[in-house]
Length: 188
Image (cartoon, rainbow, N blue to C red):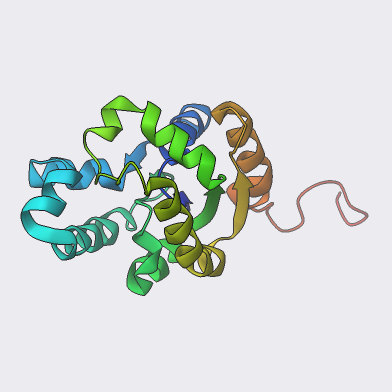
């Protein structure tokens, strides 16, 4: 079983993923970073050089690889679950947690995250916030369809979000009790 973080760009998947990985002692894999490593270029350059179709094809290959793993935190790209094959594959061995934030929060995070700003597809500064609103609205049905849980990250620290996620998934992460375990009336 993996914990799979889904949601729009800058909703905290990487930050929360690092906290979850640390708390559980599980590896964290970020599908966007894996794509960059495999291609030897940033996602921004991949979009510019080969177009979004090439990015999505690589994303499908990466998702097909990481879903075979167990006990990992998987931070996915914002559009990963728009592809039904990706979503089904992630769901087979994962608990999908949709991280949300208001478009204004996302826009502010994007503008203040200098390292990611340089590596991700660019926004039109005049229309950026509206573009984010529109894209989130388009993606909500997919996020809702595939998620097992939803956690708001809008004004919350990654540590608090991770605590909420662990609380939501604790029953699924614990191994089931063996039959007849405990002290019942039939125990000798």
